[in-house]
Length: 147
Image (tube, rainbow, N blue to C red; front, side, top):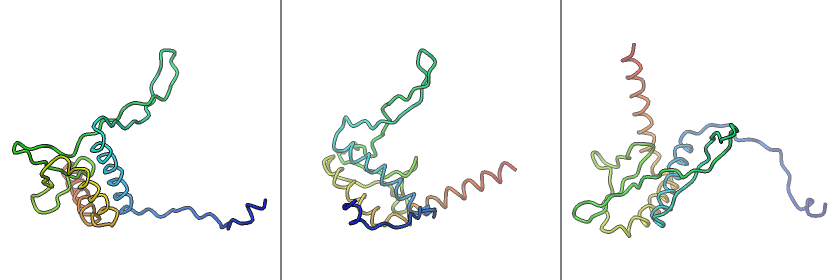
């Protein structure tokens, strides 16, 4: 009990506020972490759990490899083009420009880490907000077209 006397106890208050801006940022950071791991190790395969039925008919959890697509490609001139994706869409940094050009593939890791720091510093919030707003208006127009 002597150790417990050194601790400060408070009433637990769960975070019940829903902040979509933080959720979007967290989602992008998770995907950036996967890309950083992929840039460090080409054989990186994240895993996820999947429920399947075995031969006896029992439902079991099985760990399977998750498919991760690289966000960079090498152009014909040897330059590397890195895109940052949010969901299935690329983020457009300027009008018509959604790729970062790098000289070599070795620069990918450093650039991804720079982008990650930028996301953590909330510099991407306006871009993500714009993408979310565009998605909402597209949904509304699709719903009104069905009527």
